[in-house]
Image 1: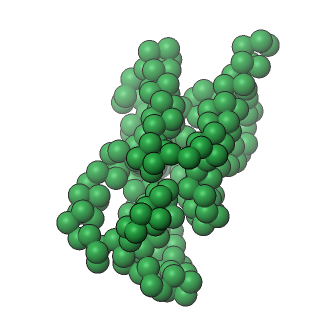
Image 2: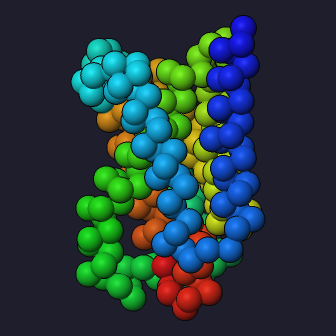
Length: 220
């Protein structure tokens, strides 16, 4: 019982208090991710050293047929979401359209390679693999796990000080949590997260997801 309470306290510290502290602390944009990097290290230590999980246990699903079927659904959902996001950008932020690839084409190519490794993989390992493994005793159903993971992922984005980042990640977080719940495949959710993240930065909404860049005059 005491262990159960400690796990809940840990959840609150990592997924509520930490984003709140970062959100309310003035720091350069390159320092914003340091506390989240610490959370990533904690998740890795717990998964590999305390839980004794092997990388192959969660990188690809044992349900390969289901994984393949879900990829088709993910790509269809992504195509529909792309049209919707494109419409919203052209409607509400026409001046930002294609900012990143237009102003920094070479940097954007590097970003395409580095973003999945340095941003997507750590986030999905924390908010899907670690979250689902560590807190399954707290949330007693897959539906509640999906909801909790979605809300935690969206709440993280309060650190960027704008409603759009929180709103978009609420939708995206549900997609990713639902996909992981159905496959237990880190590969699947990293693929899906990468698609949406790269789309958002390509369309010109990247400034909403990196705190301080707009104030610094960088058009992402």
